[in-house]
Length: 111
Image (cartoon, rainbow, N blue to C red; front, side, top):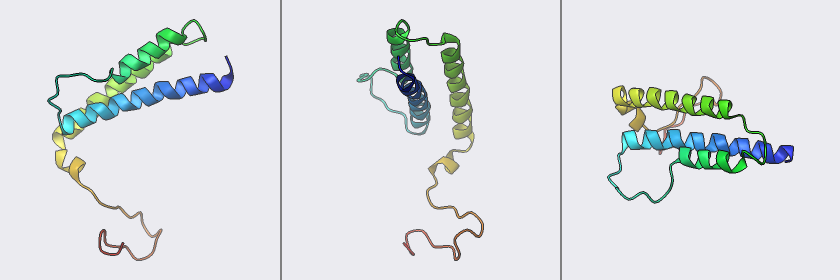
C-alpha cells in the first residue's frame, strides 16, 4: 500500500468521525422522526472500512478505538452544551475580530 492510500484512508476515518458528531448535533437540535434507516451510521461505515482493509494494510485498532472514544466524549459534551445553551446554537450572523477590517459592516444591510 502506498503512503498516499494510507493517508486517504485515515482521512476517511476522520471524515466519518466528524459526520457522526455532526449527526449527533443535528439530532439534538432538530430530531428526525423517521423510522426508516436509509444509510448506515458513520461509525458503521468506519468499522466496515477497518474490517475491509485490516488485511490489506496495517490498521492500529487501538487508535481507531481511541478515535471512537474521543468522538463519544465530544458528542456528549456538545449535547450537554446544546441542552443548556440552545439559543446560542440558533444564532446566525457575523462576528468581527478586533480591528482587522476597519468599519464594522451591518449584516444584510451593508452586503
